[in-house]
Image (cartoon, rainbow, N blue to C red; front, side):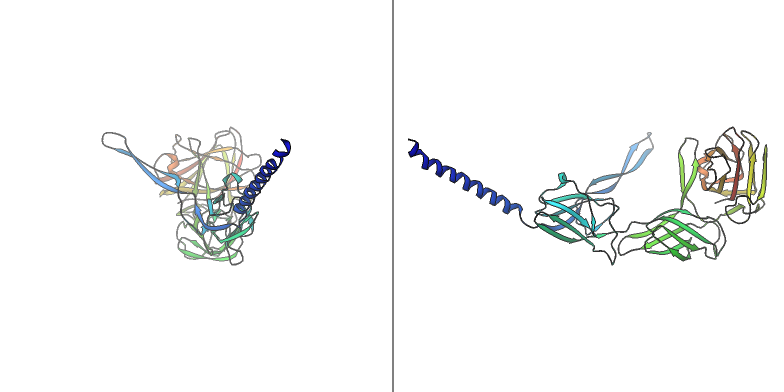
Length: 390
């Protein structure tokens, strides 16, 4: 009986082996093809949604919000910090993803045989004449390239060495992505670019400026770049505790102090000893105002030569020794019910552009005086320079 069953068992075993071998060969053949990229697509886009709801019997509230929604759109250009999908075939065994030679992380859980979902990191080089401008997928069975251009983001413009001055002054602008800097304008007037790097530029203040002039910076790239206004500076802290920020222009519509009081502006106050021609610490020029409080809640006042209509107050302030974190309340027009808090930084100049709307009296205000009141309960020394309104 055993002898009679042996051949059938052997035949059955051979059939199983052949079946397994055939399955394995078929499986290897199915997954062993080189990768193919057919397109790159977007994952989402930002959609503006406007909602109108009844507020009263006769009025409505309108709210506009930005909402991220799904979007499948073929693209050959990419924005940093944005999610995309590679579409193709034979992608399941992907081991490496590079863009312009830089390695890009991808999660294996977001890879199928037909798609790879990834986020374009800020470390990828922008497209230029010296970059490959390609995305490369490498799998266990080969690699594939696809043309993909990385857009240079618009520059960020964070600071300027001075925000007031004269034609011919050289000032330094700082930020990020100044690559391909093509122009800097003060208002509509072109400034001369003396030098520039990816994070800074030295420019010459042009002639012909009148009043406050916004500074704009333009970068030109193979793709991307653009124009940005700046710099963004502090606007103090409002009464609700919110930190304010604004884009500060160069210069003033009405200058109050610049080495000396201008346009009829003057000082007064109580329990303080000001020196309006101090040379100890100067933001720009030859002099600054040094204010020494005698005690808590003392006040230094700058009076306008005549009432002046403005939308913001701009000034530079320097904290003396031991003043780090000390508070000053800035008030306007003798109104002690509304104020903006300025936090002193010891040993450094800080430029503020404070919107007059923060005082609760409207966006445009007729200013008669500025009051700087000590609000930490301690004597302190600080300096003021380049004070005026816009």
